[in-house]
Image 1 (cartoon, rainbow, N blue to C red):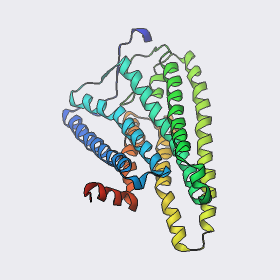
Image 2 (cartoon, rainbow, N blue to C red):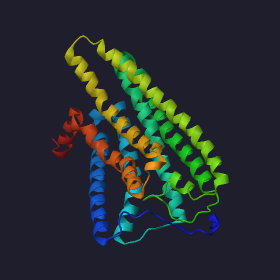
Image 3 (cartoon, helix red, strand yellow):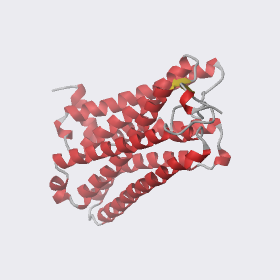
Image 4 (tube, one colour):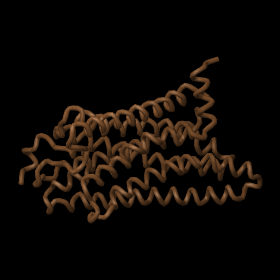
Length: 306
């Protein structure tokens, strides 16, 4: 038993015990991280530089890529450094910053994905009002609301989590600092204070999810009423990347936070945490650019300027 005020550093969960596996983890994460940097960086530069992509959909996609870059940069570099230098240590302040940034960027991303579902709804169900409902000022305000919501969410949870006394040592059962792993170190009688915030936050998450589902129900009803098969295919293609990204985001988070404690193990914990913290930021650029002709054409114009 130790007092939280005396803790100056935490010990993160190691990926492997042998040097060979640690180096393998380092190179694997380095490859994923570089792929995420390249993919998201290209999307940001392409959208920013090509005036053909200065539309609400691509404005929100640019924000999504910035959030993905931030979220993967919050967790992966530290994990890579620990594997390379054979250490598990992270300072108390670094841990608090990591918790705040991860919560901030992930919650802002979920808010942004909710806004992007509204963008698709207006584009397909109310195309004549698209310019009015999603003007440049409205888009900036909605993006700012997503970033602001993430900031407040992260600030409240980080402050509340690190104000709890830590009674069960400093070994974090995760490869990066996150709220559930820190809570497992806190005293049992103080756990319920954060649990109340988790319940309140869950209500907001569910509300966003319901909004997304309702939006897509309306979208699919509108798509089915389109007379031409080509028109239906085009409308569905507009929504497919966003649907895949939401499915990836929600499914990995659900597995991470709702898996039964009975099947929990250090190895499974690492695998699941990689699925929801590393895979989506690396995969999102591929998902959005795979069948997107506008982004491909813009990349060509960027690579070979006329």
